[in-house]
Each structure stands twice: as C-alpha cells, then as structure tokens.
Length: 89
Image (cartoon, rainbow, N blue to C red; front, side, top):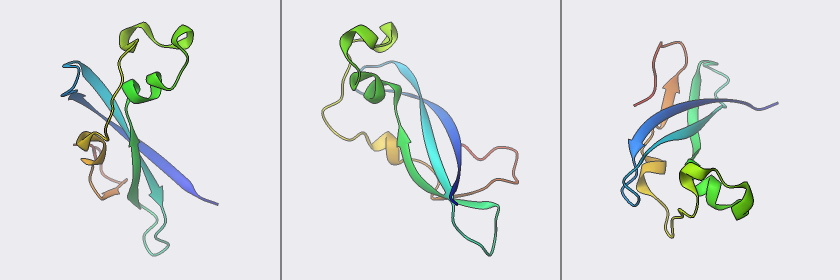
C-alpha cells in the first residue's frame, strides 16, 4: 500500500499576478525511515480549474490558464521529514 502526504505553499503566479496556494504531494517509499517522504508532483488551482468546464470553474480563476509547465510546480523540497513541525518552503 502507498501512503502520501501533502504540503502547501502560497506563491505569486508569474503569469496572472495573483496569489495561489500550490499543493505538493509526497510519497512515503523508504522502508528504512518511515518518516521520510519524496516529492512526487504538485498542483496549482489555476491549472486544475482550467481543466473544468466553464460552468464548473471557480470564479476566482475563471478563464485563467497556463500554456507551459510552471517552474513553481517543481520548486519543492526533494524530500521531507514529516516529524518536523514545518516542512514547506
């Protein structure tokens, strides 16, 4: 069974100049240390919202979209120790 944890961080979107909270997903995969998780991927509310039909989109991000992969989605720690109080950037 795979276990995941998430961490969020608020950034300024360089394309739309709005603050968004990115959600980083980490996977626990090292059996030698069950508290260490490795970065898997990250999501952005603008990207996720743009995948929805217009009538289901959040008004805050309506009609916003990104044509390229945002470097902010990869700007997370490669590994985290979940025993620490704060492991987001």
